[in-house]
Length: 63
Image (cartoon, rainbow, N blue to C red; front, side, top):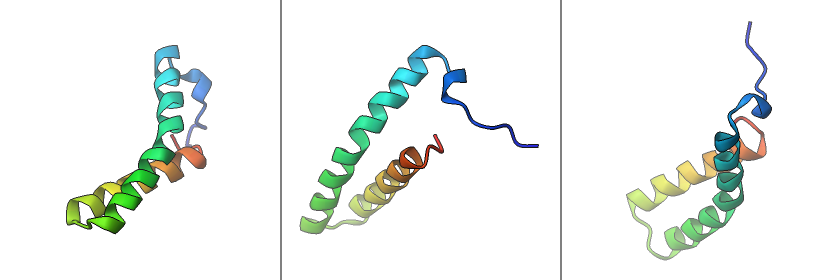
């Protein structure tokens, strides 16, 4: 049986890191999206995809 995820079970320092990351991921994703539109390379597209996945994970509270 899968255990339900609770952010309050995490240590305080890890909750702080998670909070800071969730605040900064959207601006980083927007900046990377603009950069990818101007100078698209394979690495830029890969980084943008990773940022989008992390942003979705934070919005849906998967992490």
